[in-house]
Amino acid sequence: MMLYKLKLRLWVVLFLALLIAAGWQMPAAAQDANPAPHRAGLVVVHEDGTTISRCVGFVEEQISGYELLVRGEFAPRANATSIGTSICSLEGKGCGEGEDCFCQCQSSPCIYWTYWHGDADGWAYAGMGAANTLVGDGDLEGWVWGESRPNTPSESAPPVLAFTDICTADAVIYGVGEVSAAEPGVSSTTNYAINAPVWMVALIVGVPLLLGAGWWLLQARKRV
Picture 1: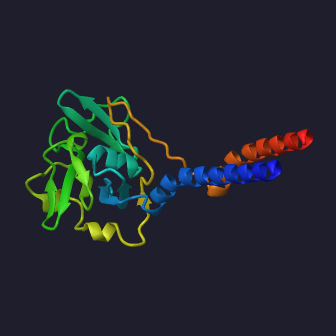
Picture 2: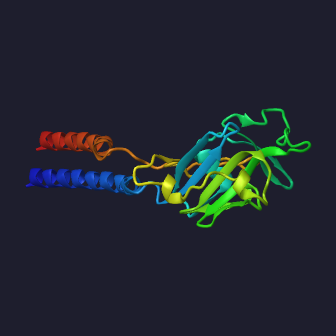
Picture 3: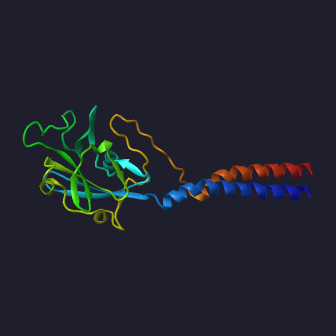
């Protein structure tokens, strides 16, 4: 009778271990099922006219325009001042390290990374800097290295594109899994999700418990 109770306890311990393993895995599995519930389109036009468009995913309701550049892997170099954050270079193009962010805007023509918002009516010159702009699901952002002509967007804005042209069903999604990017002058916070396979978690949790239960059962047999 005592041996039967010990066996029953052993099975209960193993069952609880598997429940712990499954519970540990469930949040990560849910995250993997929909890793990027929100997406925004990002367009960058270089000096030679090369246009790069990327679909950027994020789990937050909104992120900043600067953070969108970071997650889109455009490697922005920025300068934070009391009046805002300026984008000096993207992918190493623009004003380099040690240069003023507006190194080519000291006279006319004034050339720098101009910032644009896109919608169904086309592109509009951004009224605020990227760090102070919030980007949500379905938004379209654009950057052009060129002369500032906010009143003539057809001449200086990015090419005509829609969000659906960039974030297609088979588009590569950039930024998936990231939670927060570091903005100039702002400390970053990274959240890490547990994402181990169920069998691995069960092995890590279950084996020590199984060995302990086996030792306990062996000692009980010796006492009988």
